[in-house]
Amino acid sequence: MQPKVRKAVFPAAGLGTRFLPATKAQPKEMLPLVDKPLIQYGVEEAVHSGVQNIIIVTGRGKSAIEDHFDVSFELENLLESRGKKDLLAAVRGVSDLIDVCYVRQKEALGLGHAVLRARELVGPEPFAVVLSDDVIDAETPCLRQLLDIYEFFNAPVIAVMEVPPERASAYGIVDAEPITHNGARDRLFRIRDMVEKPRPEDAPSNLAIIGRYVLTPEIFDSLAAIDPGRGGEIQLTDGLKHLLRRRPIYAYRFEGSRYDAGDKLGFLMATVEFALRRRDLGAEFREYLQSLHLDGGQ
Ligand code: UTP
Picture 1 (cartoon, protein in one colour):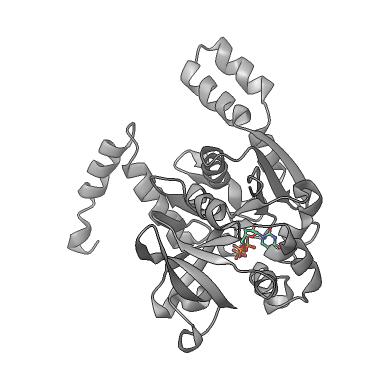
Picture 2 (cartoon, rainbow, N blue to C red):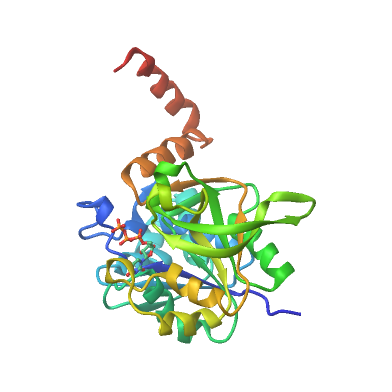
């Protein structure tokens, strides 16, 4: 039997330039979607998928992330003394979620480099990678869907979604062959090749890589072996291409909706949709949106 995936790596050392100036002194991963920071959605997804250890790769100016997952005695005491039980439970819920450990990426040298920084903490076992600015709403957590494929094939698997051709240049795009799985032939693919941010005419398919991966530890050797690629960064996609020469890698078109919350428009869309779904806010927020009479061209 293949080893179970116990650990998830959260690269969170990027500069978040698409969200400046908000991200000048505050990590993108701490931007709140309604009332929870982006990274908490990712950590909850990992916990609900059965992961037991979280490793966050942080950089300069990211201490708010560590504080968020730590115990805050002053805040807890204050809420307790004021009898704010619900808020106290929410605050304690975050630090009780799971144990988190941290490793630094001193310079933002790319996503692949960030993953490589977690090598010692991951050790010789399979692991997940979660990019928390990709927020995914799904009945079965997206990471759980990938883990089911990993457990079936004992091979790395990455989440993909269909994108229109004109959006291909914003993603890594896979060249992949469909595989019948559970009677269907439209979700699982064996990857032949992948291209980082191709021009629409060069895209080998409409399947874009998004921020969920289950990887095996050989990826670390691949990441250590490759040269910096696009933008002078060590790209995870290049590491995966290198690994592809040694073993099969699968792509899974997950079930659910993904929001690119690291992008301003994607973040706004996620905020509206998550707020509308909230029991405590949804009805009032819907009424407010309706009052804007958007069809009237405001
Ligand atoms: P992005 O491509 O979104 O880059 O990184 P970014 O720097 O965070 O944001 P923009 O594009 O400048 O606005 C994808 C993920 O990889 C992490 C980021 O934190 C994010 O979770 N990352 C990226 C690192 O941890 N280190 C890096 O050197 C680059």
